[in-house]
Image (cartoon, rainbow, N blue to C red; front, side, top):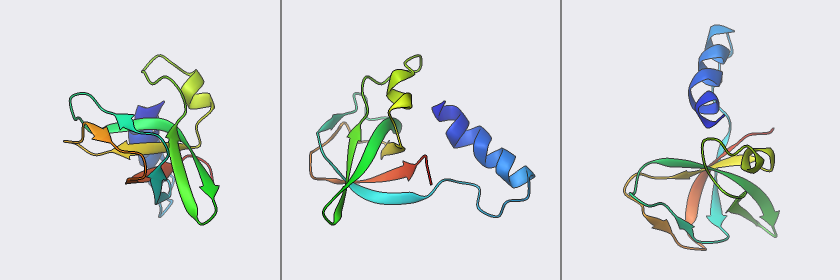
Length: 100
């Protein structure tokens, strides 16, 4: 599902004549520390919610290619940059909204 969102969906939108191929991207604050063993570029399924004036991003459950339950509860992809093995709670991260 993540590969579809990152690769297939934008290509189909371009072929269909849309001028905007990707989902909206925002900056949110991590609500709970995120571990990223190996420091590879990672797109975690997560939830972004408004808390006062801030957007808070949290992973939506166990992550893995075959685990659909975390995708079902997600409204965004949390972007963990390459070279980052841990994102501390309160740190800013890019998020790609899946709805809206």
